[in-house]
Image 1 (cartoon, rainbow, N blue to C red):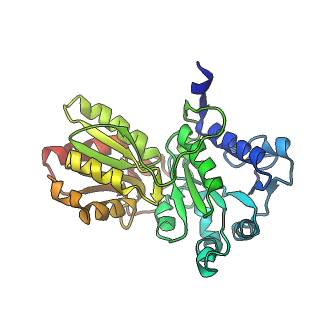
Image 2 (cartoon, rainbow, N blue to C red):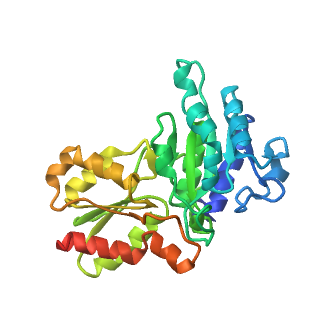
Length: 332
């Protein structure tokens, strides 16, 4: 395989991005619980402590609030910290620093300072980790002005979005779906970045637009492949960025296909799909619709521990197939 097209896992791509950022800029350092010798809860940090030392790969105490506060403070003073949460759910313990400090300091000080902090969140269900370790909270953070929120779906994007986040002057929240860490894909060597706020059309189609992100992109693509056999041509749009959101790409796709299905793992009510739906309803794309917009989100329940109930709580490929088929054939 050509070196330009070598394959890395999603986790390896993230680790490589952090190494490149640290090699290029001595202000970049890593923080998190058990990210040193242990290598991180999901082994994403790996051996970086041996390459860069404990002063730049820092194990923190079991205090998400304290760690986030140190990261925000370091960013304000000119450093570029990357802070890893063991699970995205634990961000609830650090919301004061993320929402009231990181997101607001630049505005409250009239732009005199920036807060270039990156926070990484292993997110989503599918690992049997139950209700307190399996949530999809990206919509929470997307609601906060001052934060940027991204959800990479591929190893290529995982590396490129992280490098873009490190270079960004504002706080960037990266939600990494846990089921994607072992997924492999082509990742170029060296430095490159994926623009924050730009969606990607993963599959072109004419009958229906599915808007998704993270793991749901792959399930949407699986559904599209199945529906192709039924003569239904699905376009899949990977948001990649929740805030800022790429309005133009989504709107133009819906104008072309005239139907929209929003698929997301977070709870259906007040989720990312609600924002996408409202965006279309308030745009000129609304006049192109041949059917009502459909949201397919997580059920209104905490994520169960039981594996079958866990699967039933969030959209799976067969659910997407049925929702898309019904939407195209007018069953809704």
